[in-house]
Image (cartoon, rainbow, N blue to C red; front, side, top):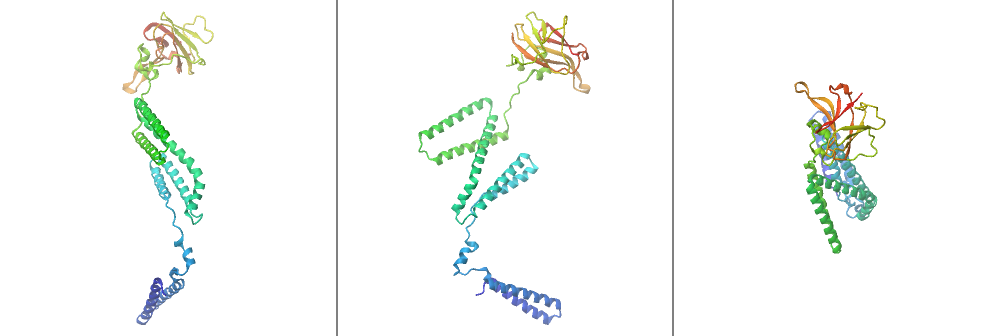
Length: 381
């Protein structure tokens, strides 16, 4: 019995033979006749091979052939890893032209999907039974998959939670934490009170909660963090005249009134109740010296002790500081100061002075805003 393929090849060979004879008789062309004869020979050979192999068909009575043919092999199991691998390749390509973080995510996704795909393909060759193959894959992959999945899941939840907390205002953050705590306690109580609650229901509720948290974290991250007010310092406000004013500024709120015992203090300047500034050195004081001397270009700690009975700040005038350029150039006082120090309080002032005191027309001097008699000359060699 001839198969369809055999019939087609036999017919083509016969047609080529007839064409060769007709062309050789009617046309005096050797090359054409040779070409058609070659085609007839090739088709005849293919027809003979096809007849011998029966067109790769298997006889219905051959049970062993039916069991061993490719169609009898079990189909590969459904897998999402080829799609994940392709997605990783796309993310990797997008990361090449966008952000480094996207590129890294693409690499991780590509490697993870490739490893999972390879493991599944290898496990499917273990036997002809799908259940056994699945068990082999689980025994190989699960010891690595479960810890990594748990770490990634926890990290994702923590990061999403932090984005939501940083997006909310300070007051709303406290409210959100209280509501979240109440929800966790309520769910835990419900699970303990009704132990017969279906596990699928509990897992579904928890899954919805985690999904909502991740979505909320993504939305909050895209919207950005809340505006956090920056606490200003005396350094930030010096150019606004804080060092020349005895009034209270934002930088004075909750300022530290203590100094560490290990602080290396070069001198202690005290404002007494009479409104005078006196100083003591960490070592012998030169006899008759009325001005404080500090080294240049090295950090020097000066401790201010307020004994005046009112809140005061110690300020240091270092001469004019040129601000701006060109026609907008103007001279402004170069000053540093402490925050307001309460009565009987102490505060440290760290100084790094780059120029000698003779560089300023009037020299350097300490003063206390609001107390005209409180002045102390500073000499920097």
